[in-house]
View 1 (cartoon, rainbow, N blue to C red):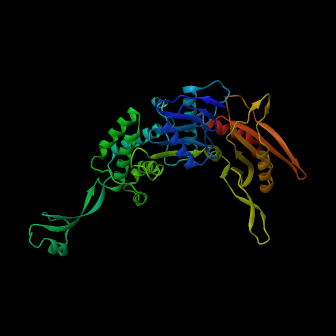
View 2 (cartoon, helix red, strand yellow):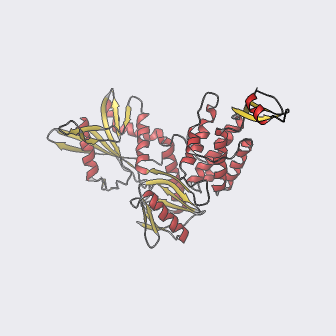
View 3 (tube, rainbow, N blue to C red):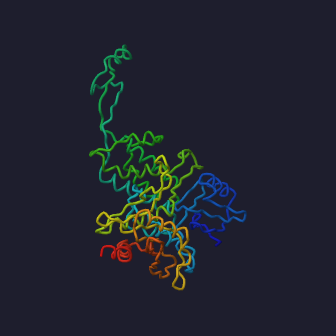
Length: 426
C-alpha cells in the first residue's frame, strides 16, 4: 500500500511497514540514505519517486533538520488517516511503552499532555524530561562533598607544606590547602544540565523550550561539560543521592541514544528505535505476568536435538510461557501483524507461525498454544480455536486479537485470562 503524506512541523511521520510517498528535499534524501546505512537496507527502502518505507521498527530517528517518526500501523481499512491516524497511533505507541515498561528509564505517566498530541514522539520525551528535572530539583538540590586543592591566602582544611614550600617560597601569605566543599558543581548535576541545554537547542516546541529553561534555573551552579560514557558510568548512587537517580538515568538515556558525533554540531544523529514485534511481545508478557494465580516466563530457551558429542544443535525459544502450580498451562507467541478477520475467518495466519507453535507444544509437552495479534481497524475479531493433530494426539491453537488502543490494561488482562487461561485452572 502506498500513500501520500504531508509533513507537520518538519516531522516526517511514517507507519511501520507502510510505503509512503513523500516530497523530500535533497538534504532529507541524504539523511535518509545515512539512516539506511545505519539500520541496513532490510529496514529502510527509498524509491526513486520518493516512496519511503521503514520496516520492523517504531520510534524516531533524526539527523540535522531531518526528523522521522515511525508509528505502529494499527489502521489499514478503517477510513482513518491524516492527523487523526497520527494522533491515535502515537497514543498506541505511548501505551505500549508505558504498559510494557520496555524502557525502564522512562517511567511514563498514564497519559501525556493533550497539547503534545499534535507533535512528535521525541518532543513528548523531551517534555517528560523537562518536567522531571523541574520536579526533582525544585524539591531538593543535589550537593556532594568534593575534594578541593587551591593556593589560598585563607587557611582551611589541611595545609600541604611540601607544595607551599615549593611554590610559595617568596609568598608567605599563600598556602596550598586541601579541603572538602559541599558543592552543586558535581557530575550528576553537570550531566543533567548538559543534556538539558542540548535538548533546549534541539527542541522545536515552544512549551518544551520554556520548561527546560525553567528547569535549568535550579542548576545555575552546575556547569556544562563534555560528556563521555566513562564519566556517566562513574556515577554511583547512595541513599544520599538516590532521589536524583531517575532524572540522571533519563539524561543518560538521551546521551546513549545519540550517535558518537552528537553534541558536536547540527549534523548529529538521535535515535530511539524499538523493534515493534519485540515491544508488543514485552507488552503481552507484562500483562500475563500480572494475572493473579499464574506465572509468566519470557523467551525461555529449550534444546531438543543434540549431536553425538552432546552439543545442542537445535533449540526453540517461545515468546511467553504461562505456568500454574509450576506446570506449563500455555505457550504463546506474539505476532505484530494484521491477521485479517473476514467473514468469520482469519485469513492472514502464516503456516510458518502455526508450525512454530506446534513445535513448541511438542518440545514443552503442552496441549494449549496461542498466537496473539493486535486488533486492527477496530474490527470485532473473536477468538478462534483450531485443533492440530498428529499421531500423538491433539494440540489446541488459539488465535486471539487484543486491543492495544485500550489504555486500561486491566481490560486486556481480563480478556487474556478469560479466553486463554480460565479453562486451564479449572
